[in-house]
Amino acid sequence: MELKAGQQTGNSSPAKCAWCSGSGKWNVAPGHSASCIVCGGKGSVSIYQPALSCEQCQGTGRNKTIRPCLVCAGTGWESYLKK
Ligand SMILES: [Zn+2]
Ligand SMILES: [Zn+2]
Image (cartoon, rainbow, N blue to C red; front, top):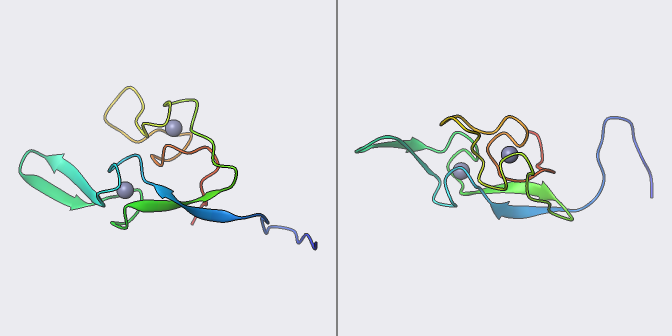
């Protein structure tokens, strides 16, 4: 196996986006929805394996406020693939 600087190796596979619960939609306000800001409307995010739930938000993707968890960027996963 070859390791290159700045390039992460390992398997990544799609996992459910916690922010939108896999729906791909973000309910901005009652009656208003937009594409999920975390997964871009796909409903899933690329997670490096082994997939670990985010400890900060316990996999919910939310912190105490309505904003996405800063640790996992709202994905609910600790080892999410940064775009
Ligand atoms: Zn999403
Ligand atoms: Zn989190």
